[in-house]
Amino acid sequence: MQAGFAMLEVGMVRIKNTNSILFKNMMDTCVGAIGFYFMGYAIAFGNGEWALVGFNKDNFHLWFFQWAFSSTAATIVSGPIAERCTLEAHLVYSLFSSTLIYPPIVWIFWSEHGFLSPYRVNGNGELSPHLTTGVIDFAGSGVVHLLGGIGGLVGSIIIGPRFGWLANGKKFTTSSNNDLLSSLGTLILWMGWYGFNCGSTLSASGSMGDSMDIASKVAVTSTLSAAMAGIVVAVYCRIFRRSYILSELLNGVLSGLVAITSGCAVVRVWSSLLIGGLSGMIFIGTSILLKKQSIDDPLDAFAVHGACGMWGLLSVGIFATRENIKRVYGIDSDSMETGAQFANQLVGAVFITVWTTICSVVVFSSLSLCNCLRVSFNQEIVGLDITKHGKMHQRSVAKVGSNKPSFDSGNLSDAKVQRPQAKSLSPKKRIGSAIRLTKTRMLGTYSNKTSKDLLKAPGVLRTSASPTRLLRAKSMPSADGQNTSTRVKDCPMSSEESIRKNCQDYDNMLANASAAQLGTTATGTTIATRTSARMMTPFHLCRTKNPS
Image 1 (tube, one colour):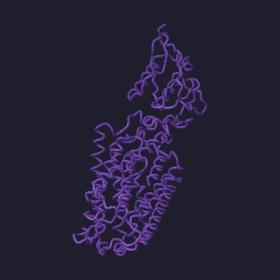
Image 2 (tube, rainbow, N blue to C red):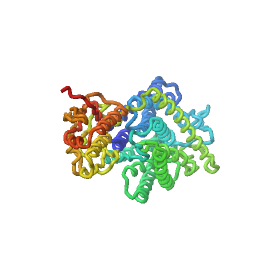
Image 3 (cartoon, rainbow, N blue to C red):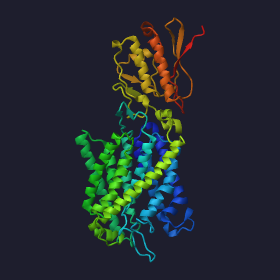
Image 4 (cartoon, rainbow, N blue to C red):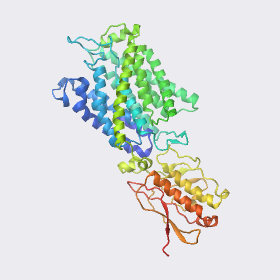
């Protein structure tokens, strides 16, 4: 499952954050294992077995299985806060998730002592769940996916959207960086889901009725729900968005898997088609709603795991049957006929939502107050791979055609820029066009050309594949006849405010020069940039008097 999540997330984010996503997924697994070993398992199953001291050796498989669930719940949170959250903050949340957020929910819903658990036993060792049958969540639509989705939503709201995601009231969409990785990741997750859902029988024979027959049915219902959800999303994209969108299809399949996870063992086979189809619609509606509310979720993780996880938990109260509940849990009750089971499921969904929201707000708000939740402006623009992991990605061509930065590419240096025809502009406007181009790009790979070549480029603005040259600017006469020079100032990466100030200073310098002089300097001014393995400096321009 972790391999699937890693591939899916890497395929969905921009290339400049690839290493960051992979590193976070690996560390989720490591941190989650240690936290669940020392503290999480003891809380989840309430036997006081801190660090597995006094642990029953026959239950090692249960620890391993529950650790996988715990790690999945923490990994879901990385999607909504991707590309702008610090590694340290994410690891802190992962540790809290595996020790203090996820384990109490497991104790309440899945242990023999939980007050909402269908496995609860009395002093005589007999099944005696509260609320007649308790809350049925067979493989974790609520316990795992709703919990992870709510945590991700809270984190996304507190940390805020990515820089540039909202510009002039219009939202930039992010297409997949690597469709192949996203598709392979989804297929791996689909196959891994059988381990979660079918494996939740916890045995191959004996307890829970005929376990192999139950596991076989679970595999069928899980398959049909995922397939129907994918079809519904694909049809929606074709009708309403006029194209087949791969990323939407992938999330649609996952939404069907999430929704069926609660009731895969207790619903009829044909019911899984309805559950999956409705989950596809819920995913689409939730995704649209979040965008309208200006909540930036790069992977639509809440729409897939949060909203569809809640739907999966509630669907048990609608589509489960008395016979299936008795077969799987050994409880014979009329809760389905009276509607009590739906009420139980609603109570469970509300409890998980409230608990996770409170815990997540405390953790993320504390990190935000400590100023260690979000990366700096420059780090976010350049990419976490360069600034945090020392990994630079090469980009080569930026095409003319749009006056907005493109978030479809891996680097802002590839932003598409609309350049008016040079022959229709005055010399002053031509220079201003070059400066606006520089402002749009802000940071990244610039053309190793003079301004004259830059302004007269016919259709494609080619950038250097290895932006490591520092070009020297030529002298330029000022309005009073004194010689001045425009040069790049060698200084460390500055803040957003400094970038804007330097651009404004240069605008003022141009405004003070005559049109004739600007015409002569159009061939002499040079755009330059400086990069290194760890940083990329913005476009710094300043005036210096020539000593002569």
